[in-house]
Length: 123
Image (cartoon, rainbow, N blue to C red):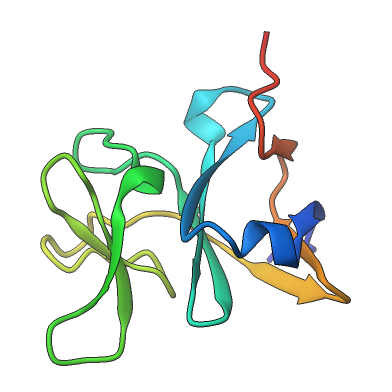
């Protein structure tokens, strides 16, 4: 397993104000990440749904029926992905890549090899 490449994303008090947001990859749209915040914790998954490319950062966070497990629902076709591991709850094997997130001293970091920003910086 590769060594973590923790990248500073922003201040926890600012980022926690949005439940879902897009992190823009300098390397291009395909590398964007969706950052989620719910119940005091951050999660990060690939930004675009594996089903047909819907924007997960525009999805809704909800409890999976009968559990306390949080999932994001794609706004295009309703596919649900667990925030903790990116597992699809509709079709086995159609999963989102998950990125580790940590908070230290009020700062949020994502383990990612490509440069990210909360604002679009691509040319």
